[in-house]
Length: 287
Image (cartoon, rainbow, N blue to C red; front, side):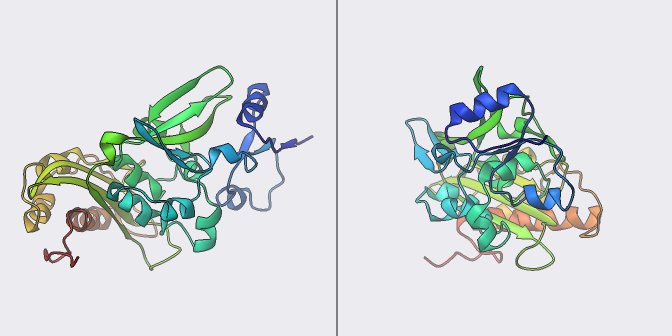
């Protein structure tokens, strides 16, 4: 017999997870399409009653995003400019109706190479909080998503929060997505960039690309090329010449691997310029 449970506390949910295998249901925007018309074969743990896991808090060391926080919550919550790229990505997650119910943790646990939230969270040095009855551990997001639909979740664990260290909440950021149409589209390529600019010079850079490898990747070569440059068209020129060895795109119905490599370099340049406050043509964005 298939079991269904809807706990109201995190401790209750963890106790159930400790008893055996459950399929976790959060917003359901990935859960139900994946299920389709097939009969349920797994016990279902509905965590939508866990109010403690929804919302954004600030501690001395971190910004803490609860696992059940929705994309609409992200859009509406006052956050530093370093989170603007994440807010822009949030507006690209399906329709407004999906953004109202889809959870941030669900986007990560679904582990799609095209998950819109992942590149922006990577540029924020995000880490995932994983809890079980026995322990709580924290993993860098880049170590949590292992591949297409694969994560580092262990039996008995669930994601309870995403944490952004305070030092990573510095600077300004942007997100650029390329798709076949404006809305409700799976990415051909997408990029998030966060820059810390002091006295017109880039001191720190974090750039990540999604849909161009099995998992979204930080682009270390691009980041190194940007540091020390003056904000402006020089940033785009550096991107166009920088190595992007981390990327290994596939060819599918949305685009060839060669097209993705060409396209991602262009949108990296656009995202970097936008994060610095410049338009694609290198002109300053009006205040």
